[in-house]
Amino acid sequence: MIRLKPGPVSITLAALVAVFLLMPLIAVIPVSFTPTRYLSMPSGEWSLRHYRALIENPAWAQGIWLSVRIGLLASVTATLLAAAFSLGIWMLRPAFAGAMMGLALLPMVAPPVVSALTLYFFLTSLSKVNGVIAYDTWAGVALAHAVMVAPFAVVLLSVALGQVDRRIDLAARSMGAGIGTRIFRVILPNIRFGLLTAFFLTFVLSWEEIGVTLFITSVNAVTLPRLMWMGLRDNIDPAIAAISVVLIGIVVVALLIRTIWSLRVGGRDPG
Image 1 (cartoon, rainbow, N blue to C red):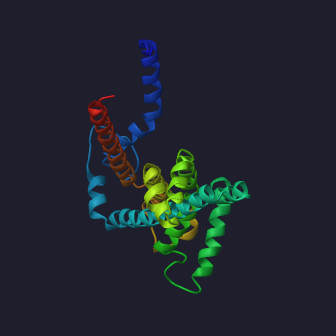
Image 2: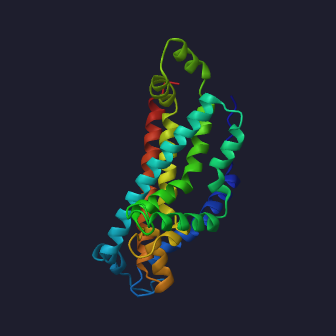
Image 3: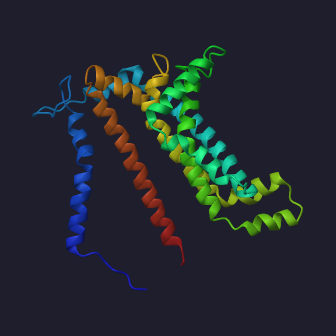
């Protein structure tokens, strides 16, 4: 097998493109060390005051914890619903599978404002009968996020199921396996990577969701993206740059760990 190696010109162009794309992220780093109360580049003096504000101001910790709770509940709900839907389509192969798939993917293609308004009226209606899953509650936000991110899980799990050989399900069925055994001991183990990917993707999408959140929250359910939006809208708080740098650092560390793990696994692979 012939392997083509990129030349110096290709490497240089790729590096320039990467730097160009990363410049907005890189520019946030010095801004986070500004000693002023507004967003600006530090001129000679660097300060950690805005990083200290992240620790001293409990609103940031509360926003992070709320976003984590909402993200976990939304991702679990969306993954379970998407798995049930995808398995039903894959196993039953109904006549209107295409139309059903289109309805499941509707939140993905609908304008965000339309989805936000629909969820707003839905949650305000639920507020009249309960105070848990309602407008401006964390459970209500999690439900809305689950609705918005579930289509992405449906796509991932449908692709994962499309790579599963149906003959293993037919073999299990011919040997007398029930529907529960076929699902939990035959099919799901073969798409476990797709399930994990769907869970991770829906968590990330829920974590960064802001459009719908602005419509269905007020003062009680203030997620981290909403808190950052409020800081930019009200007083341009440089602490937003500090929390952005922290999040960028977490992503970089996660990518490095993933890369190192992949290299080690690849090094142990005898093939």
